[in-house]
Image (cartoon, rainbow, N blue to C red; front, side, top):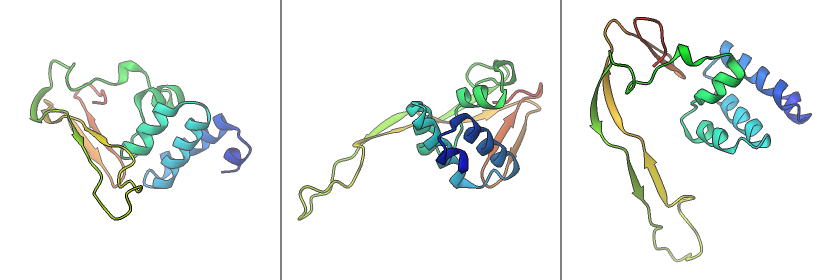
Amino acid sequence: MIFIAQQQWDKAISNLVQTLQIKPDLFGIYYHIAYTLEQQGEVDQADIIRLGYKMLPLSFLQKHCGFTDDLAVTAESEPNITCIDIYPASEINLSDSRTIHSNSKCWQDEIFYIKKSFVATIPKGRAWADIATTAVITSDNKLV
């Protein structure tokens, strides 16, 4: 955290990533990464980490972890993967409750976006998970 205090953002991210490699279930580290990215003007990436269930965006992995495009595929783009939709992407409009405090808001955002949900079949694929991370890997060792 010393690098954050000194505003040495690249060194801070490097140390935070190393921490997650050792102990990926230190959930507070994700918030520190989001804060550091936000300080560098990477607000969209910070929001994905902060609001995306502790998920590091692909662009972050590419920039800070040496992850390359040839190591990953999307379920929709890989011809050997069959996707079975459960429900489509949607948005929910929330309205504030009516209370005696008319100026108070219950929700920070009024619209919540829900990603589509699907099940994928991956021939000879593998899955891995722990308390904080999950991974699905194709038979030719690409991350889905």
